Image (cartoon, rainbow, N blue to C red; front, top):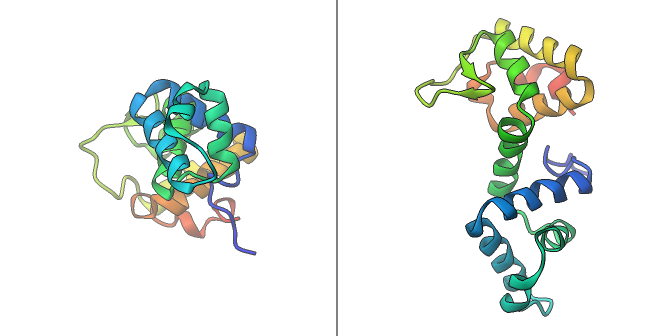
Length: 159
């Protein structure tokens, strides 16, 4: 059995909460997710889905695994940058990367830190955030290896 993506390894309730937030925050996201359900078949009509509350639509999206890999990345960024920036803030502080409440400046270019700084930052994240921190590190290892040298080799980032 293959290892699930960092997004798919989140509990379903957490994934539903992320999708619900995305749907409530953006009409475009709501329309996109509804369109995906219609395209999958199963008897869903766009007009019906448009009338559903955000949480019901999100539950169906998660139940049917209608999120794309791009959605997964967007939802993880939502989680770690907008909703719960504490883990990313810990990581960036320990790595010596400038940021504002966990948000890195657009002008920064990868790699953002050297391998020693990445190792220190990973240790700090695990020490302060435990399993949630390990999940964050797995997310970086999967989606942002070029930005964090050596992240994929760290035991905490594997799994």
